[in-house]
Image 1: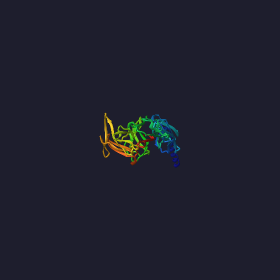
Image 2: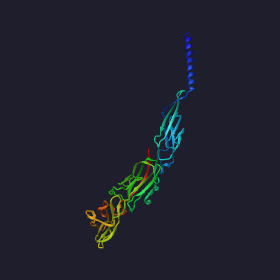
Image 3: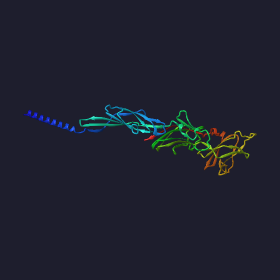
Image 4: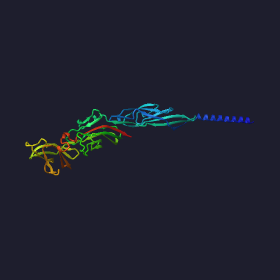
Length: 398
């Protein structure tokens, strides 16, 4: 009986089990598989041929830059992959370990790699594991100036591109007729309202540097359209500096370099007289943006036949609205309207500097060749100043 019961019990259990199996099989035939997506953790990285690319087109919307991407998979059981290239062409691609993407503008470009692994748990469940790998350093396409010679300049004769094609020099070796600054500019387009970062290197170099010749007047400016980006007043002679600045929402704009002349022809006049007779007309020059007028006097060869020293008299004059005005000394190197003539002895070279206040002479300083280290001739003056520029970069800021 016990064996029979045991046999019977086993038979019933087998029938029940077979019945359950038939029920499940029948149910699966009329239903879908259950799929689930889970976060994966795959080891992979994105490699590009270069993360920083430089171009010189001034139209950001007309670039044609190819970048090669490669997927390096450290996990071997990946079933599929998909590239994502925002603002690239194409914007996506599947099942390719290497691909080339074209970009048509300056900017910072991210890329992603979506990896998928499929795992079948049982007959009912299929798990899809996904992981997104982002590029460690996005690709940057940056503008770099390489054609300084194409800038539009108000005076082409002093805008000189050096033989390396990387540096431009603004020469100064003359007195200008006016104090109007020299301007060089280039037009940029297609930046689509982006925030831009500018970086440029510049230096100022005196023809005849004097450490004591420190003046706070503006010598150089860089502008975006009419917006002043930065200006330079004081000079560290012959040393490059890097200037960086940011400008928001730029699309089309002009990059401008403005350099002020050191000396310009002055409307003031000075004539030296001796014994009441006009002897020498002295050329005067304005120190631009410094409220000073200077002149150079060559009296080293002017002596009498007897070898005695002559004393010359000088008045500073100008004409306004048909009226002539004369300024002279009131003593202690101060100047007033209708003052006394400045006394200057012959037999030497001089430099005379008039300081203006509200546009009128206030004082003067006379420098004699044998008692000063300051140049007393125009040819070796301490004012002429060359400006150099190089390494202009423009970057789109994300």
